[in-house]
Every structure is written in structure tokens, then in C-alpha cells.
Image (tube, rainbow, N blue to C red):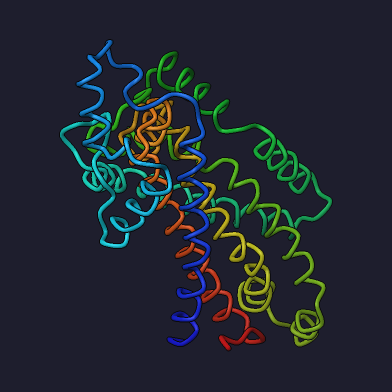
Length: 307
């Protein structure tokens, strides 16, 4: 397995290189610059700022300069948060985004998996139809619509939960952002588990188990659930990416100090290094999550081999 992990990590290097290269040149193509919102500066001051941040050099030279720093683990200084480096900002924001993402993913797996199993066991009943309708609603309504509605209803009208803010990660402040972030993933997981569970319940080995008179609970948990989990496990990689990118919107709506807020502020203010640092972190996490998913898939399905 070690060889497999090493090979996958080495294979991810070209992917990360392409992502970094594409993001670097795309953000530079966008109109405007990092100091355009400053009050009118003297030409000499502007020249000095461009010199300090190496913006006076040709674009290709800036690109290789950034790659060299990135190779040494230096994400550079922030253009808008002058007293902080990008590494320091991401180190402060990453725990917030990871907390939101991990809780939302756990909630999606627990609720989505449970609803999918119940719907499959009660196929074509009103419970099945209710789960399908709820899942379809959850998939079609984006979280940037759900999040303000949750804040308005539970934070403003009912005043039972905070409408925004981090408050040191207090559980009450996490409820609404986590629900808003998890709802689309709950819907997707429920549909995946329902479909695969129906297929698993009709498989030969489950029929054989029923013929031996095994209890339904044992058949579902021991023989059907493992096969039904495989599509959901395959979806964990894209789901983790969706939760990380989705948290960019959620953090902005609820005013949370995660990397999503830094990404939005960096993009709006053309803070090149901050945007690039966020892109690099998200890309690395997506690669790692996909690798973990592949390892889990091989552990659950003996037909899949590491080599």
C-alpha cells in the first residue's frame, strides 16, 4: 500500500502544477490591481510598492519567483493584510473551514446514509417518495439561498440561534452554517445510498442470506450495507471539495473567519498571493481526500487492488 500511496502522491504533482499555473495567470488576467482601491498614491510610492512586491518584473519572472518561494513553503506576504503573511492568515482560517467541512461531511454521511437506507427498505412507499422529494429539493436549492433563510428564520425571527459570527467556535454558532453547508450533500448521499441499497438487496448473496433465514437486520447491516456504501465512499472526494469550496459562500454569509472569507476578500482586492495561497491549500486537500477515498474503497471492496 505504501508504494500505491507514494505513486498517487507523485502522480498528483503534475495536477497541482497545472492548477497553480492556471490560477496564477487567470488572476493576473483579471482587470485591476492590488493597490487600485488605495487613495491616489504618488508615482514614486506606487513604484516602490510594485518593487517591494515584485510587480514591476515581467509576468513570467513573477511566476517563476512565486514557484521558487512555493517550493520552499513560502506563500508570500498578503497585499491587503499588510501585517500578516499568507501562511499566517491561512493558519488562522484553516481550522475554521476544516471544522465546518468535517462537521458538514459527518452530518451528510449520517443523515443521508440513514435516509437512503430507510427509503430503500421502504421502496415505493410514502417514506421513499418523501426522501426522494426532500433529496431533490436539497440538490436543486443552492446553499447561498438556504443559508440566508436559516439565518433569517432561526437567528432573527425566532432568535434561538446566532445569525452569524464565530464566537470562538461555540456549538450554537456552528449549527446554522453546518446545516446550510451539509444539506446539498445530505441529499446526494441519500440518493446514492438508496439506489445502491436497492441493488444490493436484490443481489444473489442477499437472497442466499434470506434463504438461510437470517434476520433482516443482520442481512441489511452485514451483507447489504457494505456494498451500498461504495458509491457514497466514491463520492467523498468530490463532496470534500464541494464542502471546501461551498464554505467560501457560507463563511461570507455567516461572517466566519475561515479561508473562504480570505479568498473572497483576496479576489475582490486582487490580493494575488492570498488568492494563490487559498487555491493551493484547497487543491492539496482535494488531492489528499481523493487519495483517502481510494484507500477506503479498496478496503471495502476486495475486488479493488492497490496495484
